[in-house]
Each structure stands twice: as structure tokens, then as C-alpha cells.
Image (cartoon, rainbow, N blue to C red):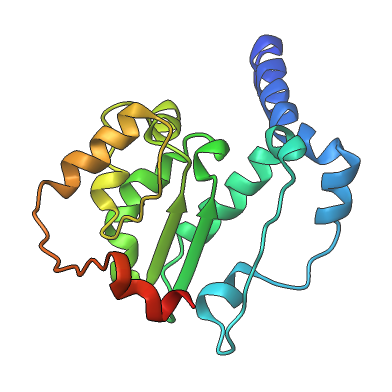
Amino acid sequence: LLNKSENERSGVLSTAMSFLGLYRDPTVAAATSSCDWRIADLVDGERPLSLYLVVPPSDISRTKPLVRLILNQIGRRLTEHQLLMMLDEFPALGRLDFFETALAFMAGYGIRSYLIAQSLNQVSKAYGENNAILDNCHVRIAFSSNDERTAKRISDALGTATELRSMRNYAGHRLAPWLS
């Protein structure tokens, strides 16, 4: 660093400070000042362990770099044991560069990912229109959607089918025994 020109040195310091600025936040500093677990405990530990990263919506934008760092470190480790990585509102973390490609091989190394998003628009906003996130999700669970694009994609994926059911209808005096 000392051998660099003044402009280059200030650029390096500026970049470093922008990444380390997160730790000046009192909440983040307190949360990261000590730790009673290691990433190795999650991926190689003999005892099952759960890690819950709970971030209130009001803190997502300022803690995003820290959560991304933790997920990046976990996702890049090969595991001896099964690991479930459940990410609620995962598009809110922004694009995790390793994640899109890592999803393709994570399952082979014992990492199962449950990715939860409100709509496909959220995924597209974070990863672009032509992303491989959904392609690498082998199980998809969908609930009612207010987003037309998401609803259409779900409908197209399900296709068409006809289901036959037999029903009995009772009318008039035949219902009397159940109504009294």
C-alpha cells in the first residue's frame, strides 16, 4: 500500500472503508463483537445446529452486507452433513453472485436451499430476467398471487388437467333428518 501512488492509495482506502463502514453501526458492532458459533459448526458439526438470522424490515438495507457475507461463507463450504438453508425474502438481500450458480451443485454437497419470495418480480429485480434461480429449484410451492406475471407463470407450469368428482345433492324433504 505504501508503494502505491497517492490516488491509488486513496482509492484502496476508500474502498476498504466503504466495506468496513458497516461495522461502525452500533447494532452491527454489538452483534459481531463476539460469537459462540463458527460456520464450521453448521457444515461439519457432529451435533445438529440451527442458525437464525432475523433482521427486522427496517434494518434490512443497512445489514444486507453482513447477511450476504455470512450466506456467502456458508454457501461456499462443502459439507459433511445435511444442511438446510431457508431464506425468507431472499431477493431483499440483493444479488448474491455465487448463489445463482451454486444452487446447481449445492444439493449434491448436502445443502438444501428453501428460497422464499413474494413474487417472480422480486427475483427478476435482484437477478435479472434471465436468471437460473427457478431452473435450479426442483420443488416449487406457490400460494395465491396478486402479481399477474407470477400467476401466469405458475399457471403455465402447471398446465391443464381435468378432474372428475362425483357429488350427491340432496333437496327438499330428503334433508329433513339433518336439519332437525
